[in-house]
Image 1 (tube, helix red, strand yellow):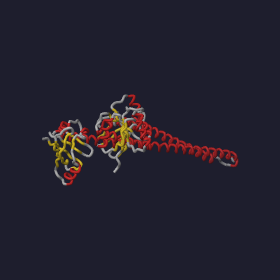
Image 2 (cartoon, helix red, strand yellow):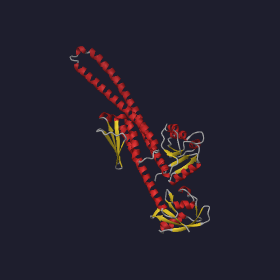
Image 3 (cartoon, one colour):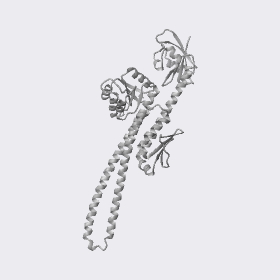
Image 4 (cartoon, one colour):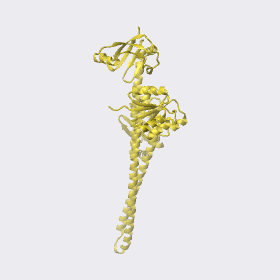
Length: 435
């Protein structure tokens, strides 16, 4: 079983920080620390070895450094950050995008949006490290190629000196040679071979520079995509269209359109023009189709480097599409369950592993507005509810059991009936019996 990510919160509004901590722990994340100043966290990080998966930070912080400066220093240590902020002006946003940022989350937010921002941020950072590793490898290959080119050029000069010596020797032996045409043809063929070798090296050099150019543009695309993808709240097909439009810019005007087939749907870039010249690449059940204006353009742009970049894009879209789809489904299920509970005229509390839900009757009875205010409102004395639930409902398979409780600040004693939901040991409901 993989270890849950550890998350540091840097937020100068303590009630927001505590709310985020409670939500994150509810999802199973570890939250080893909360800081209201960026410099305090950097000092703690310097003095103690901390295992940090990702940092949630506000842009505007009290103290000497703001959230953008903090995120930049953390990026130098290869620790990703997600900005959690209520508002930003254009100047601040440009400053925030001056280096790779792995997510934005707008205040106020709901628990599912927080979880999505964290998972997408972690996934974006993982993909960033893969791309960075690939670029580093490409740089090493380029340096090796430069070294080989230099060696070949030195060999060419040495061969040139040898040929010059042969020419001098040939002049001395001209009177003794019946026909020098044979040697002239040999020399001509050698020169043609060397020129052809040089031409091939030049083509290899051009391909290396083209691959570097594609990766640089690809990095810009991924950086822009990481910052945009978590700030938009549009439907999935529209978000995929935005991604295709950004990716199309990598191939300049030679690319006439990009289409993707995913989940039984075909989605095109906004300025899609159909042509007969295309390149296709698949990942799982996703197919990407890139259309060009000529075969020369396709050959120029579709290299090993661009294929790796396309593969990275398909993995990113697959992860993002499935995560967004699952979160929307989970949100719809939660809304349906809340509607069902609200149709019942008695206070009900629903408990599960990672969430709690209450209906309107419960809110009225306990005088609260949401589930986050439920903690500490219901008081039970000398009762181990977890143990009783396990013994009676799970082991003995009783349909329900009742226990007594009080509401904080009131003396009235209430009866509560607890039962499992669909015989699921991880989900149960408390029905408050009003007398």
